[in-house]
Length: 172
Image 1 (cartoon, helix red, strand yellow):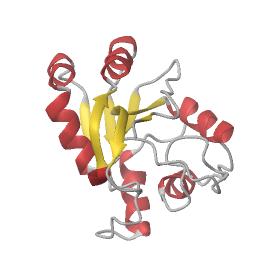
Image 2 (cartoon, one colour):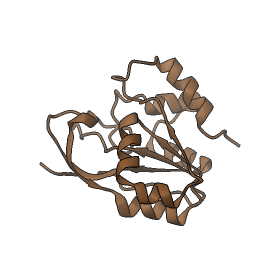
Image 3 (cartoon, one colour):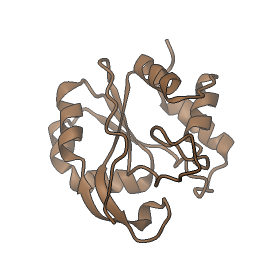
């Protein structure tokens, strides 16, 4: 079954950074927190960001407010796809339709300085499929973050928090 991206793109007017993931998690009918990027209970992204900025981000509005203040846009590289199995692993995704137009517009309409990839998979796939963007914007810095997936166990959550603190923009 083909799934379409559930959230679209988030691009504040002052976007200087782009947080780029692969594709949204599958919707679990019992998970009431399914309202925005990195929204599954198991994904560590928001708990990492809360520690990085010493904030409580209980809902979509508070998250959007923080990322507007930081100038960070959100998008996923895949617009639609299928899942081989009923899970959220990137390796499970197949038959991609890439989010090319939206990502091209984010670069074209904003002064993007850095792209934060949510995983090595996203970095490799982006550099393979979005070469025109990479070539057209040579001054953009591409940074691969430690995956916020709990399955990425090469680093502890505390180590991930430390790395995100180093790499993400400071709060003004």
